[in-house]
Image (cartoon, rainbow, N blue to C red; front, side, top):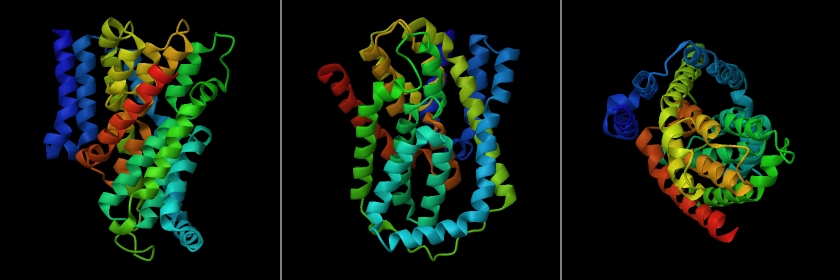
Length: 342
């Protein structure tokens, strides 16, 4: 009965944001409720989980709030800088460089800061919604992948290093050596895709007046991110039973595809459950690549998605129109590379 309950929750989390406008408008609250239910069904809800769910999101929330204040006062200068850059280089090349540079730098400045820069740059460009969404989704794939190259980029990479640190060859640059070629190639391909998405859908220039950011708006956005991260923590803890009982013992090739649940579950939790210092490098590589790629497919998949979708009011179905097919194509390509070419 517990497994059936979790499967039902998984189905609801996957489908309701696309089927119900109310759920889509209140995605944070919906995921929070589903996370609480998953913990209650499995009986794991206790003081320690509640404490973690309350404390853990504060770092991300503080970064979003403080960066929101910073960008509120510097947005005018950012727009001026973009105008000057676009006088020198073509707009498609600029967008392509944004995708690549933010992807490469996210391992140093963190995925959170990279996604906040992305939001401000794209907001300043004033694109049509459909074009804006495509660029944001592609960029978040890039940021999510690039952040995994060092343990400071995102929680997934930090946990992976922590789980493997007892091995003699595992150090700060282990993931860069392990995943570097795969991730760098993916970031460059994403930049190329962004270059060839035509800008004819844009609706104007940088001169269009922008709605003034309010202090309340900054605070509410940070609060939504807090609730979103809390919801993912509860969901991850609630699904630990399924992971421990059925998933972690599977073949790496199967795990690679099953890890597509990272599109709606916290990939840091899945990393903590699946990675072991008894695994070979190819096993670790396949698990992490499956998690990283699928994390870009839907809004709950990683923090950059959540931040960008919240700020730019991107709907779940609009994100999925680009994220799911792009993610599936990348999953197939890297599956063939990992299991047949390496």
